Length: 298
Image (tube, rainbow, N blue to C red; front, side):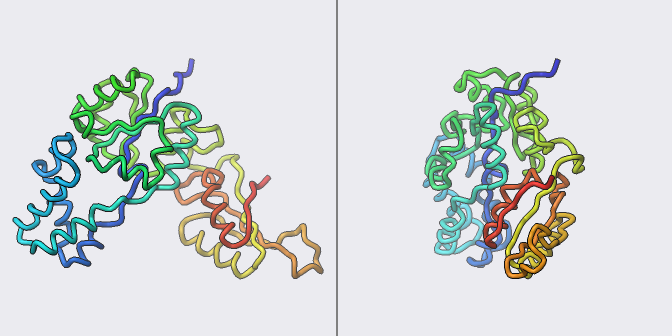
């Protein structure tokens, strides 16, 4: 008998559902050595009090500035760089679509190492409405990979380890959760997240999980009104790793109806090796930007 799917998806935030622009961009603007911001911010004595709720996010920022100044960065440059570095980040849109799909099958809760700025960040990103609950280290008083963080989270959520799936992009956190009996998946990429959710029965059966081949899953037609735009988009898709990206004239149009003819791009496989149908939302947006639409191949 198949194992029942998890009834709780415990989801890491940063590196899974939220991303950030590279630090070196900010460091370059402020003429700082590459890597200096993260090195200062994540020193255990600097970050740990903020993650455990002993100090707030503002105090953490001040501690980062002091660490940079100690390392020889001028005060003004340190303050400006830290202000720019403490950005909200961006939502990983493909991961969000997967979370929305999983939420139809189970509860979804964030479990994240975070400072007191988390609530504001989630509201600005719109993620506060995309999950059923948020459990943060600064409120728990314990941070991953400390096993106590997982124990306290499950007590707060009133949920059993065996019916919980925990996913994280950091393997050490996954290992700690697994040792407590949680189902786990290491998801360093969105493709890995998709595979994990599908393997645990949290996605609709669309041929989108577990297999790296297209199998019998349908391809996608991107239908555009302009031939030049169709050929340009096909070239961009092929460069990004989609295939086969062949462009065809819509044979349903009359042969003499050249002004109204549509042009069709056929894609079957996404860059991650999954069927193109698994990424139809992305293809929808690409087509809509060019006054087109998509449909599944027969």
